[in-house]
Amino acid sequence: MLKLPYDDWWNVIVTSRVDGVDGLFVHPVQDPGVMAGNGTIGLEILEDLPDPDAVVIPYGGGGLTAGIASAIRALRPATKIFTAEPETGAALVAAFDAGHPADVDYRASFVDGSGSRRVLDSMWPLVAPLVDRALAIPIGEVAAAVRTLAERVRVIAEGAGALAPAAALTGRAGTGKVVCVVSGGNINLTKLAEILNGAAG
Image (cartoon, rainbow, N blue to C red; front, side, top):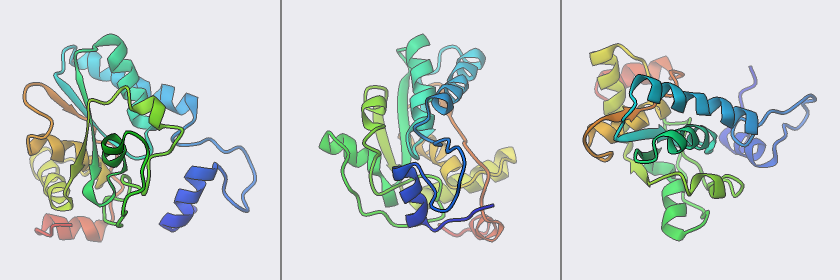
């Protein structure tokens, strides 16, 4: 497995290429097929719960949000769509505040599957019309959600995966039938142990 420092990874996301690697690059965010595949998550949500009041999606590059939100908007336009990012890199929140992609002061955290320096310019026009509100979540609240998921429902979530439950558990996503997309479980075991023992991230 190729592991890249954040700056190198971000360069791959922006340029759609990995220096020194040959082959077909399927963009994990901007590829239309990837976004369409993500849309099936929205279909599954509505199959299981036809009338959600809100769906909360962790925001990384925007492809997950674009796919899920497009499907839900098409079939259940009354459902609110919220995104959740760590406040240490809430680029979509900043973009909504400015009305366009804007640079933010990104700080690395254990929530490494979400948060960035800037919303991808190519994703902004796709995502902006679909999202009702972008939410910035404090790291301590994300850690608390990781603990809650592990203790109450025996789900191990990575930081990005716990963003949506953190938003819901703190009331940021409103009341009623709130669906949280828990998007991954790739958390460092040492970090997980620290969080389960009470660390705030």
